[in-house]
Amino acid sequence: MLKIRSLFFASIFASTLVGGFAVNAETLPIATAQSPAPFAAQPANRYWNLRQTPITDVVRKVRGAVVNIQSEKPASSDDFSMVGSAKSNINGMGTGIIIDSRGYIITNNHVVEDVSILRVRLSDNTQLPAQVIARDPEHDLALLKIDAKKSLPVITLGTASDLMVGETVVAIGNAYGYEHTVTVGVVSATRRDVSLNKEISYKGLIQTDASINPGNSGGPLVNIHGELIGVNVAIRAGAQGIGFAIPVDTMVRVSAELMGSKRGNVKHGVGLRNEVKLEQTDGIRRAAMVDAVEGGSPGSRAGINKGDELLAIEDFQVKSSLDVERALVDKSPGDKVVFHFRRDGSEQKVEVTLEPGKPVIAVAEVVWRRIGLKVQPISSDAVAKANNQLHGGLLITEIRPESVAARAGFQKGDILVGLHQWEMISIDNISFVLNHPELPTFQPVRFFIVRAGQVHRGFLPHID
Image 1 (tube, rainbow, N blue to C red):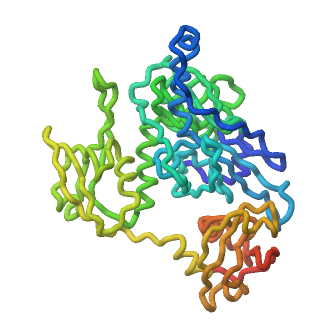
Image 2 (image 1 turned 60 degrees about the horizontal axis):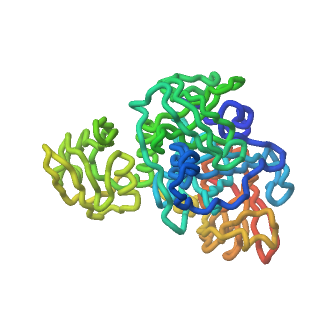
Image 3 (image 1 turned 180 degrees about the vertical axis):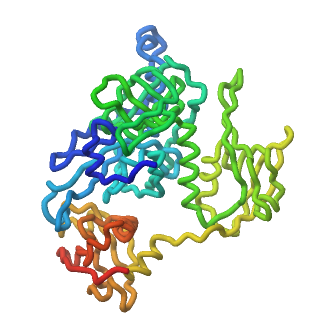
């Protein structure tokens, strides 16, 4: 089990874990050049044919599904850093992979753990705040969500099960802050067990000599067809040409579990097993096989059996357990969904009525119960007059009488911008503070609000 580490701890190992951090320094150089125009068909002559290679084709295919991740965490301080000096910030960098067009992104857990501000930059330079949906420290993976205004490109999934030592691979990432850096190498070995130190170890990694640097963490390792085969995770300190990636097959399974945690209150009762079938004509084919059906569950009552191969849910094509979670992520108890499956060579479909699963307490409900606030995010423009270093805030829309917030003097219309030493730009930031293992040592928790264009500060009464 990977031990949860602070962001400062991760910065110490910036040469080992590929998500790097810079403390008390100017931000790392970030590419600001505009994205190149879409590739235009070139004249069919020898000059262009010689320049255009399978590698350039891979980059064009994959680039849009790769994002740059920037994070911040204030260094240890008695004050809220964004109100004072910005020099105490710890700046982090990493890479992410878009796995769903609605803005779901996979990256490494060590890229996002303990951060208070998380931003994602798309390939077209659009920058958006991101929230952590779920994390798996043991496998060093985390699921993020951004609210994009458009459908995003999604990476094509391959498999690591048929990798050949020596085959060409391409890594793309935010190396040292240089966005969408492309490096090329080969698969050096497979199924490597790697121990970075006494606390951090990995099982079954892909080894490659494609250059992987701090900032590449969470980025894709793809094959010559542009299919994802791994998630870049670590390099060997002091060595050259030795990098490692989490196999995509592990990522698919863990990502499905992480996304499934988001729909924890919806139940269908169908257990799945991911299979990769190697076919002579079409290469690999992923399949989501029904491995178990819970007795009395919606799936059981609909007639789904062990051994069925799921083909689609509604109009959403299914090839893995991750696809099932993507299809159901926005569904609610009582929704009727059509499951398409293959049994004994025959394609069938049944209607499944989803049921409530294990109760999940929403973050907003926890914030309302523990401190008595209802909030909604606002942009940095709304707080720039008070302090141009602020990245946004949370507009207070309702206060529960006699609550912690009411006793602290909060008013409707105030903008919450900080708690303790962390900036508040999403309700998940409040949750981060409320669930912090060291919360008792923070109390009374200092708060920062913007009221009438001015920053005010105070202390919250004891939080239970």
